[in-house]
Amino acid sequence: MPQQMAEALDDFGGQIDWPRFNEWIATQDVSGSGPVTAVRKLAGGLQNSVFLITRGGEDLILRRPGKHLKPKSNETMLREARVLTALEGSTVPHPRVLATCADPEVIGACFFLMEPLEGYAQSGELPGQYATDAGWRRAMGEELVKAAAALEAVDHVAAGLADLGKPDQWHERQVERWRSQLEGYAVTPGYDPGELPHVDEVGRWLADNLPTDRRIGLVHGDMQFPNVMFSLKAPKISGVLDWELVSLGDPLLDLGWILSSWSEAGDPEGKAPMVRPWDGFLSRRELVELYGSLSGRNMAEMPWFFALACYKLACLLEGTYAASKAGKVPAEVGQSVHGYATWLMTKARQITAG
Image (tube, rainbow, N blue to C red; front, side, top):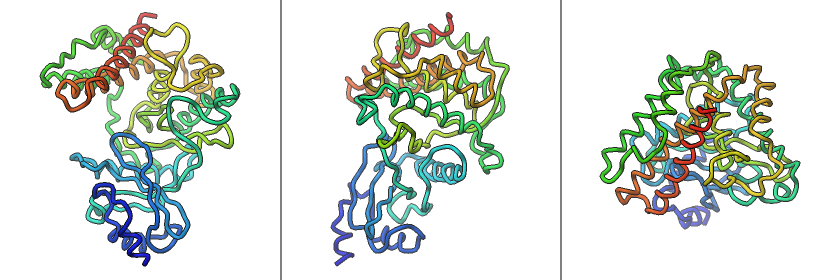
């Protein structure tokens, strides 16, 4: 009967081969016993599929690439599991990896299991006491900065992650790296990179004002509200999620990413706060000061990292706009993303002109 129950589970379009998965998990030292008896697909990023599975009354999270694998999907998944495993014992809040499967034949892709975390991760309307208590909202900003500073404090060499990226001349390479990404979309019929404003001016400023205080460490790559799980029991982070973009670089870029997702008076028009209600959140200046006090870094050159975060994200987002021109993404989604990319470059221009 248990095997029949397992075979009756939804495989989500072939994303989980239950007989083979149950055979594999029986060999792993993870909580629960027997075959999986329940599964639910969780909301997550566009690139990966995340499932809550139950076996022997115990819950586990299964994370795998999306249904349609890309050339490096398996490699990226194993890299993410490797980084999370290396963070074990650090002060970075993160889900604990319980088991990793590097054999794509088991369920059709490489995957890993991790512990479930309590809380929520989303943008939009805040739940629970975050919605009613401005003190909890203030703590959200503090917690984000603490997580980013904790990641900077990780010795990536000692953690065995020295090969995670290309740290040489990292700061010097950023403008051309993301400018070439943007211009690469020009092969899409109907897309013109020139639609994104201020690219030349911001790129020139970034190239002419390289920071002198430089460090290389782990960079999460997308540290913002939808990728961070906040506890509903206390105003704290349960864990930072979605590590597929982690690489080596200057960790101040993660703080720049957080600042780019923020909202405050004086920002360009056209962007609503990522979460609501927004009153009670720390100001960007307070976020920067807190990071400096935690990391010991000189924050005088933070505008460079803030502008770079806006520049990089805008160039990346234009890929979705270009895809909409090719009919691969709904036109309204493309327009919305292009609107945000335009806001980011306008903000970057504001930073560099200040």
